[in-house]
Image 1 (spheres, helix red, strand yellow):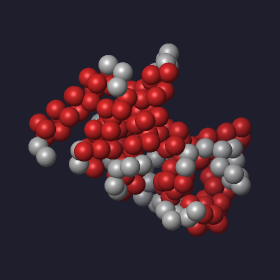
Image 2 (cartoon, helix red, strand yellow):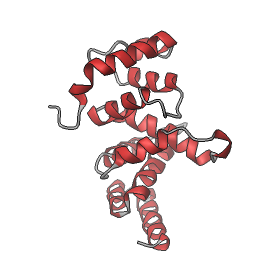
Image 3 (tube, one colour):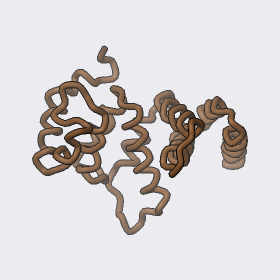
Image 4 (cartoon, one colour):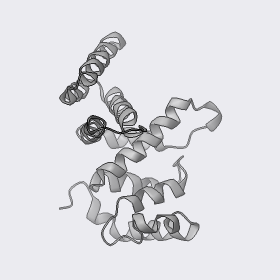
Length: 180
């Protein structure tokens, strides 16, 4: 698929979604994986981080986050997005997409999302502030976790991060791809 074809699909989806057709986001799944995930994150970001959220914004953000799960190797893309980078070389859109990805995973708050955030929290090559990841896990209100949304502030301290890392080591088997 050429760049021109990719851009044409994204533009068509944008027009349809702007016109109220949230299902048009499904067309982004036809893009190569390394374009599908960032395109979905773009729609998520544009509709999740809005001052005056509407039901349409919520529907678009929810659909975009759900579709991320359907992209093969989305976890590989997210791991690369979360990897350490030279901050001097990072464009603003990259950091914005990184923040959108974390918010998207919080909204999903399922096994895939928990696994992506918790694995990043224990990855020595992660380029996201560990306090941000710990806060994201707390925001998911995971049963049996050391912190919840109500105790988010404590979760992002050095002690809180250590507790999250210990919790993940003890509980990761429950969150594997094939865990029931």
